[in-house]
Image (cartoon, each protein chain N blue to C red):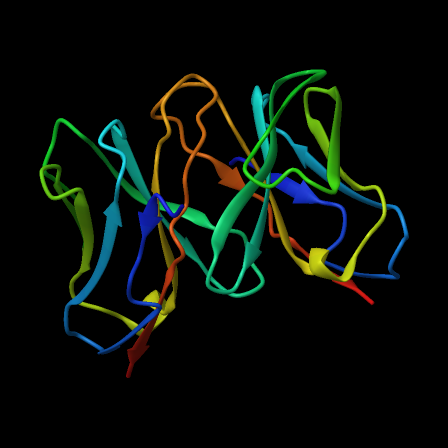
Length: 113
Length: 113
């Protein structure tokens, strides 16, 4: 049973516009959420995170929004750049000291010049 | 800078062979993880280790085993490789704690013929 869903397998956006990547989860016990970015033939790299006590976290061009009642989070990239083209994974933390993450299926973002 | 290295970037093996994938991290992290990434399925946790000689099964441990004899090294073993184990294998490490980031290696693309 998929606890974390990214329903858009791919997204295409023009350079300079906003990219919005969505993530839905089912477990209300998740309390910390991370986004990772992955280029082909490389490992994922951490991008931005948000704690469940917040509803927004911003870092430069990247903002993550959390709607706990809807069990939904989204990643906004403004303005989008061609170098942002990658696969983005949403990864809630499963709780506990072992720091297990539950990864979504990923969204492939293509930013067109 | 955290560095996680994996012994091979690409591997081709035959069905039935025993396969060793090695991962080394240089940040003295307690936690280490093995994932596989498949199209449409995201990253799925195979095994993780929270200390030397300690291991726990992840979501898809069948057909795999692991070894952690030293803190910096975590090995994934495919006892008898099968074609359905063709995948991208990713190693990660982190400190324990709910808000600690996992750092990933570059991945090993394994093809089992």
